[in-house]
Amino acid sequence: MTHPGDRLLAAQAEAAEQRDRVTTSMRLLKAKLSPRRIAKQAMVDATIAGESAAIAGVETARRYPGTLTGLVAAAGLFLARHRIALLFRRTPRGDHETDAGDLS
Image 1 (cartoon, rainbow, N blue to C red):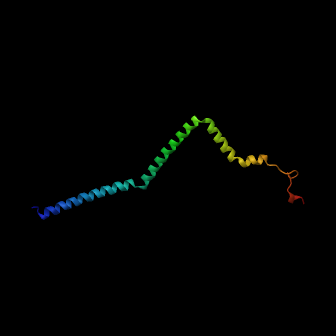
Image 2: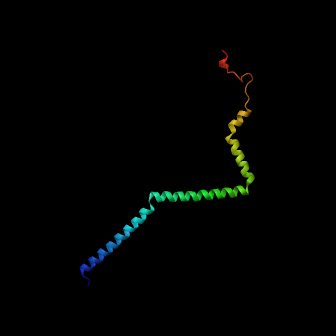
Image 3: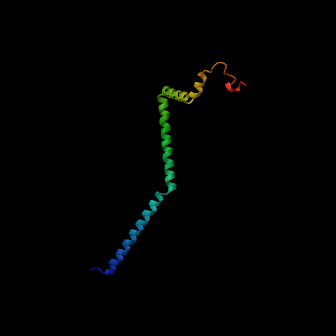
């Protein structure tokens, strides 16, 4: 039969071991959830995603240069649509230099 003091010492040793394990787990978790570490990992992930998108875009442009040229031209026309419309807008005759309210 075991002595009650031996069981108490074993339980205390086990409790100390469990406490150390919890402390170690908490330190690891705190390090993983550090805002600085999370921000750094987000930057790395964004950089990798950006590089992948750029590589895919270049490969697509090499594969379909005519389509890319058409899309760029359409985007340019869309962005310049107001200036292009001004080129084709007609002004009434005689209204070029003066405004109707400035005749006095």
